[in-house]
Image 1 (tube, rainbow, N blue to C red):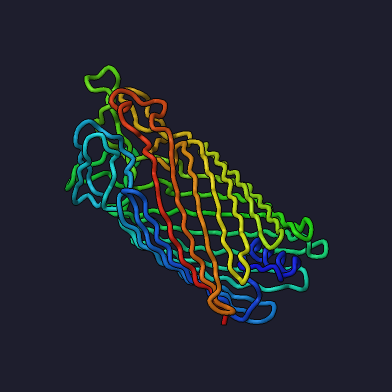
Image 2: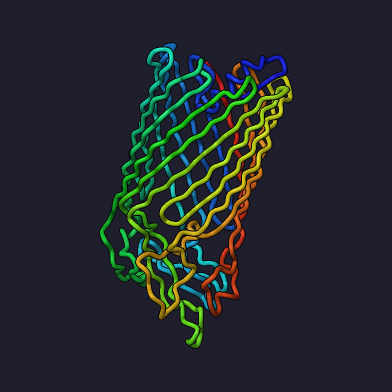
Length: 420
């Protein structure tokens, strides 16, 4: 989005409104293409390309299509605890193994995937004050497939200064991981030996509802608030994650792993979130501040604060720094490792994504026109994630290790937008 000092405040707010509502300024056909490079330090690297097209069929009818392709490779934590000795883990396929050096967080260095995603939607006006949309999406990976539909309706009130909307979505996902679906708490078998499996694949379903309101506060200010609820059911485990069964304090080597068990999570999850956003225009610039509070019945609560400041450089150029802060609590069933001799609960997982951690993102975007209807955007972000290196409940040798090493990542994105 570009703004200049000559643009009227009314026009600027109109542009800001389209950003809030997830649409672009009206035109015959708007095309946006992006390329993303993402790299974690010593872990996952990814590349992504996306193209989205918005075409105005008629004055009150719009169709949107988006195509995304990404590829990931690198090393990903398998959930197990470090050890004072070399550890050997069976690969997900069960046909090979890999070693982890003493004191290191176990990483599966064979992590590799590609994904193709397609989404499309159709929207139209119903009279002067109402709008509806319907859409669908497909995402395919070598071990995961998702098909979904969505739709919604919105209505303007108060001389179009207020918009109230509701949308629904449903997706059906199929998981067919390498080696099949492991039985919860089954032991990780040695390479070439059979691990207990539930079958070759499994499924889950996700239902979502979102209620939203967008309000024009004054000629320079827009406010948005959403409430969303999501219900998931089916297979919600990560079939590649295990946790370590470690020796007790009374043993010769407390904290040292004895064996590895596949995780177990509930087969249902209800997620809720409240999102608020304030956009303020002044002197050609725009400040965008948002806050999101999330909670679920797994015990996770999170807070996300996002701040953007778009600074107008005139002649269609702009620079936009931003900062994002995120913090979440741990799931009720998160454990860094299970201690021999204690009671095994119904659900346990050592997936660090379910732990207590925080993250900060610093970013900068520069946008400039190369023609009347063509714009290039360059974005750079630095991401750092940190958690408790010595969480409660660990014993023995585990106290000597950093169980949540800081994760740093760099992201670079280039976008090319044009209209025809």
